[in-house]
Image (cartoon, rainbow, N blue to C red):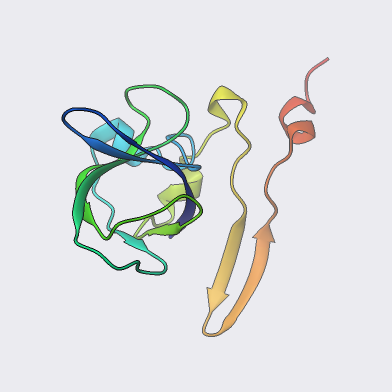
Length: 129
């Protein structure tokens, strides 16, 4: 799964958006071929389900994780779990738009272990001269 934090909410005359800190560089499958990944709030807030687009902060039309998804209301700082990202989740990730790739954590039962640290800006420019 990919964990992402809600940064803010946005609404226009037709749609509601949850802008999250994960982007199309973290999970490319929805942007590339409209892949469906279940999304669940880690903690549920009260209230009726609402239809939202879950989008990243990269400001491109393809920067979305889900469109027209029915979710419990979410607030900024809430965490969403994007499920069933599979082995391709990280393998297809990139440093597009100078965004470091996410950390990877291996979970086995009740144990969790960091197996790849989050990249830093220094990692991004390491091979440049």
